[in-house]
Amino acid sequence: MLVVVDQPNTIGALPVTVARACSHEVGYLPGLAMRRIADLYPGQAKTVPIYG
Image (cartoon, rainbow, N blue to C red):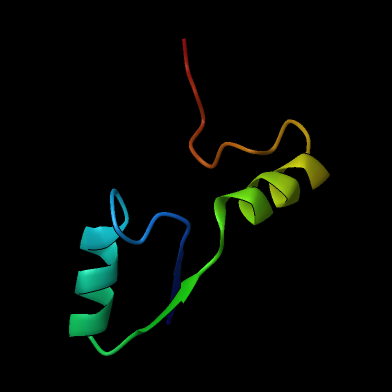
């Protein structure tokens, strides 16, 4: 399993720590790259459906 985060020292610190403890690979993708990738898929940027 590969875990990729864009904020490894703040909100991403817990998933990075858990992934490393489980011997999973961890990758870093800068926030700007994440933003550009999200721009390629307009309307699909959210992974969790919003209801209401």
